[in-house]
Image 1 (tube, each protein chain N blue to C red):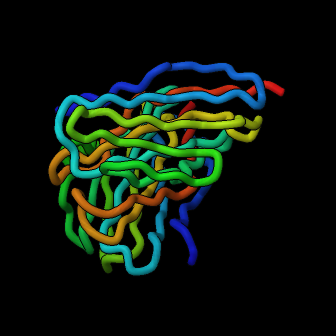
Image 2 (image 1 turned 90 degrees about the horizontal axis):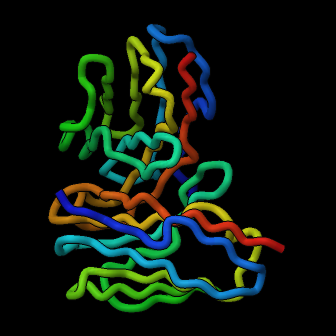
Length: 115
Length: 108
């Protein structure tokens, strides 16, 4: 069974530029999550989707971050304009059911460096 | 929100040694997972263990939900065990909340 796929693996941009990350969850998983992991810290949730609807985006900096999951399968996370403090690894995860039940599986992550 | 505390923050072991990593959480949880983050940054699932004890090879984990802690045991450590070990919990219907991790270095 294929795992969670993410791309690109690495991205270097200058501040104020834009970037987009893509995630394809495990087949059949209804719930998709985007986490941000800053160096030396544990991952922190940015947004959770259940099918194509947003369940929780309370920690998403909406002035610069946006995410969508239009057909309830793959998802895109966008940052525009990027700031230096956005340098981090962006992790996508999926689970069979919604939060509160079900094991989460993570992709390899997309490492962003903002110069 | 819930607090997840992991100890020790750093651990250095000689190859072949055993270790115990601890995860304390401040409120009741529905689920708990242990992950190993390898040097390339990928989070690898170790255990999905809201309660009870599980074993997988040299690793085992125990969660005592009523006392709000979980333990991860690593026996006969190998250099490939190096990396960061994260405990993550699900309080109520919210998504996983991570601790700060335990950084393990196994020296040959």
